[in-house]
Image 1: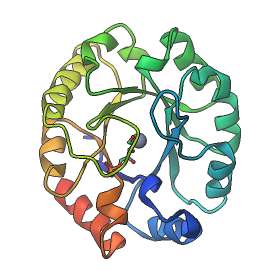
Image 2 (image 1 turned 135 degrees about the vertical axis):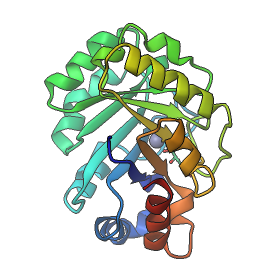
Image 3 (image 1 turned 45 degrees about the vertical axis):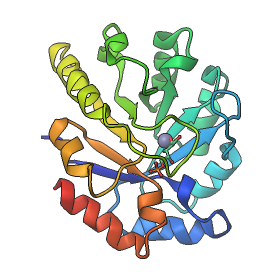
Image 4 (image 1 turned 90 degrees about the vertical axis):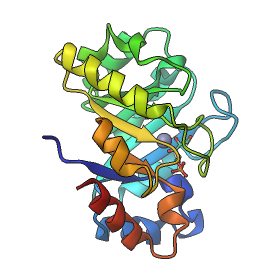
Length: 219
Ligand code: DX5
Ligand code: ZN
């Protein structure tokens, strides 16, 4: 069985102490860095982009899992590969030619991910799931950290898991938004492989311990 992973979202880190927070993740039991790119158009918020990711990549010793919340992501696929992204996830709702976008991501040597908003059915991935490495199920409406987890996500994880098995796909299931020690186990039991956690990790008293606790929950 695929090992269950934890990916802290740096959106909730202290941007004035980014290197310190990256080192914390390096030293912790976390598996990936989850990096949220927002353009103020696809989502009502702006976060950070390529120059910041390039700077992070110099210090990060774990895989960079980049989540693009931007319109027309095709424009920047090559640039994200150049600055060090290992996984690149685009939103289903932002892609007119999703299949072509997935091929372009893979052509640049990255794993291709598709993120689904809470209102987007996993059924829409029926014809692309075989070409997808990672599905990011949004368990909050994208744009902000610190929001409440949407309970319907459990059903979506189960439906997606069935679809993946039915189509013989190797896609992993990542859950993004409102993840904490109270829902982590149930998500993994439903079929999730990777849990993103922002506020729960970085707003806690001891982020290293919080990551450890999350890993224990899903071991
Ligand atoms: C939301 C982002 C998430 C966010 C998660 O738009 O995609 O990755 O940082 O933050 P929490 O864990 O605080 O919900
Ligand atoms: Zn994210």
